[in-house]
Length: 107
Length: 115
Image 1 (tube, rainbow over the protein chains, first blue to last red):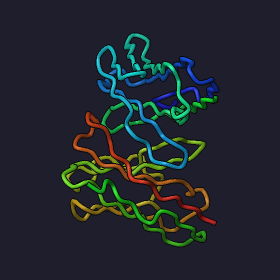
Image 2 (image 1 turned 180 degrees about the vertical axis):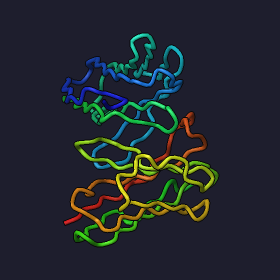
Image 3 (image 1 turned 120 degrees about the vertical axis):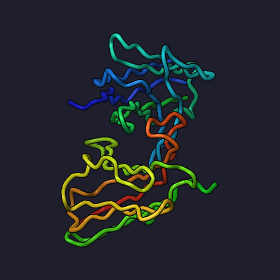
Image 4 (image 1 turned 135 degrees about the vertical axis):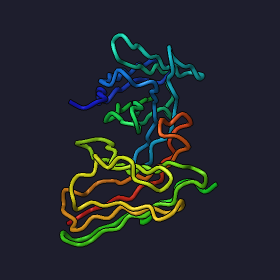
């Protein structure tokens, strides 16, 4: 069983929509979680770190639920430029990533 | 800062040939990571170094893969002999910490095709 699981999608939403992704993890000892964004044929880039209860940055909100061992990413007022693959990462020793969730925002 | 620099960007080779991928981490980063990304398996950690010393190579698929970090500014990932199933994008990343508190910075990747 992979340590970090994500729904691959794709999630197809119109501009302005609110969309949420979940990511489940198996290492209950992990203290740090992350969301990375990866554009097509590009490298992953850090979007948000997720500590304790969560983190918010503009239209993006990440939350951690330790009891159920999942983290979520909420994107409000989706933009065309949000179209990408979102990777969930868990820090055990080094970062372990899920396979990613693909988001497509259309006009 | 130029970021993490990987070379080559693309590599096409024949089965059985040796392939060497190169990485220059960000200056001052103590940790260097090699990842492999495929559609089937996603982004997998192969090996990571701390201060040029390999710490965890449990993700290296088999003995055909080897990685070295002779100094703080250079690392190589070698595949010998290469096989078609090794076709993937190989990313190098570096960081101040292993937990990624400040995030890992990834290079642009090497897209390897073994025919």
